[in-house]
Amino acid sequence: MLKNKSLLLIFIIISFLSFFACRRKPIEIVIVPDALKNHLQRAHLFGNIYSIENDVYYYSDKDSLYVLLNKTQQFYSSDGYLTQVIVLDNNNDTISIQNIHYLPNAQEDYREEYFYKEQTLNKDTFLYDKNGFLSEQQIFKHGLLSYKIMYKTDAIGSIIEMKRLLPNYHLTNVMYYNENGLVERIEEYDPNNIMYKFITLEYDNYGDEVNRRAYKNASEMIEYTYTQYSNEGALQKVIFEDRLHNMREDKIYSQHDPQRNWIEEFTLRGNDTLRKRVRSIEYY
Image 1: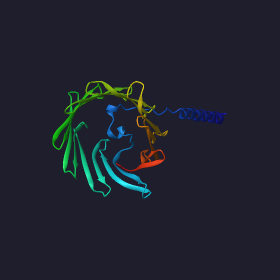
Image 2: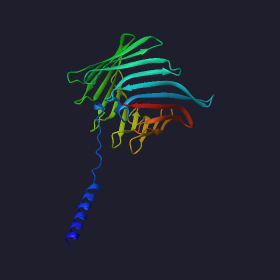
Image 3: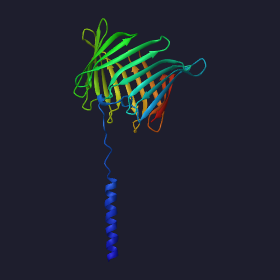
Image 4: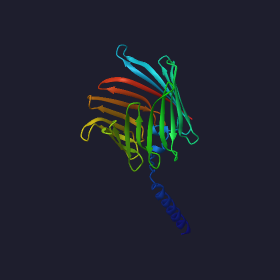
């Protein structure tokens, strides 16, 4: 009798543990607001990336093969911020080098980009308000101030207005955000502060952009972009339609690394392959 009671108790314990093991909590979906994302998150990149090389090829009908057009190398800090961009031509000669410098709190201080052929240096500097949010960007070309961008932000630093102050006129963008802090509408205004274009954005349950529509007015859509992901969040396809010029362009991503980042992109227009981009990613 005692043996039977012991067996019954063991059975009950195993059943109890099995019940709760099968009732695991679902994985919580955390959506990061745009204002709090680092550069890797903004670019929909996964993992602790050190560098990315993009090799761009165009398809030559004459030779019936892909021909290297240029290369771009991007380097990131260990906390996901872009630190350097190097552009090379098809002979591996350097076209330009851009270095991004940061303040101690990871905010951008300034960017410098040197162009080797022209031997010129361009520079962007960034200014912040008393709350530490971006307020102004100054763009210098050949050592001279070319134009400014003035920013207004909300309580967490999301940009709600961006005004480009060019020498003879200004252009304004106004941004609106959803409850997750993701931009859902962008309005573009001309120098007379008349809206000439607006863009709407939609996201899936994971906070990834799936639909982007641009309108010339309330009823006329001029551009449409649809983005498709796998169940694991890996980018699969981007379809862009320019309805003003009756043009469609598809980008296909069929190969990914173990971190879910794509490593090969094909750009198609109709039945023609326009371009191939091969990506090499190095992790910390």
